[in-house]
Length: 357
Image (cartoon, rainbow, N blue to C red; front, side, top):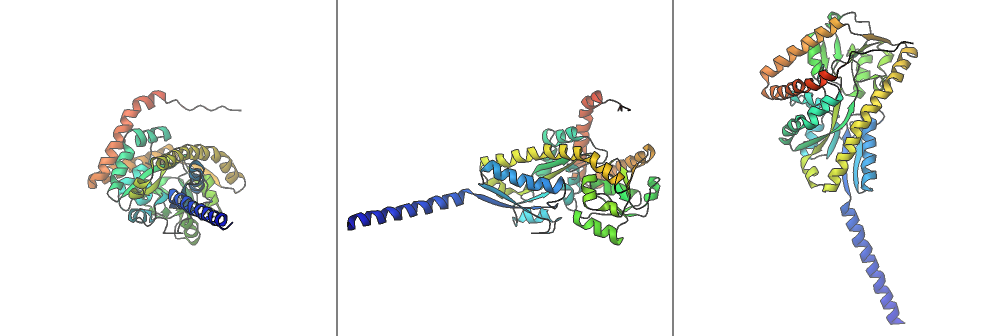
């Protein structure tokens, strides 16, 4: 009896030891990353896509890879991801290259370009034409790597308190503006500043800025711009297509298994397609609501105004290329691709026709 009890005790200890080893192995297998988003979880398309990506990674990995979403500012200020990820303070950020232009103005090209191409051509340059390779050459200097995280449809070009009858009336305004488009607006006498999404409405409300652009009707009305500025202008000449990124610490990325890398790559590829189609689909209903319910005046720049804006953009392009060799390198690469693509693009272009009831 004593022998039987001893054997049972030893078996129990062996089972506990095996359980401990198995638990330790499982714990070691699970990879946990922190991902701070530059966009709040409730912000349509930009923030909701980050939450969706995080959940998709969990589903695809069976819970063994966790990329935990953190709200803007929860870990670091939302526009300071570059340094935090570079240092390894956090593994990743759901952000946009356009937020890092204080370090490298050329990074703006990898988010959006004024009077730029539709999504197919833009991603063609980035994915297959060498654009993203240039981006990651810049990031590699700082121990960073990025993969495109989402794409969104064309944006609006601004919310104004009063009707703007021509671009000459923009002179003297203080306006939140993003990317290379901000430099175009500066050419027209606008004082611009870059603000994170959550900071725009308070600045507009207090009069720190007179006008703003951010994104598209679904997002802009969520942020409340229509409550203050009742004139919304189109088209989004400065952002015909916008692409953002999962910015990652290169050492953390390199430490991942091939399977985990594939999970991230596939989840991000799905996110790019999902967000573009979702954002394009959602705007007509949002525009109808802001027009009919909120009494927003939907306006369109005249062809003459768009010509002035494009001329200013070409001046910015020439001036920045002259003073910044890296900017010129990226700009030339982008323009060369567009020239080559035009053989195909122009051949497929049709004059728009509209059915009339």
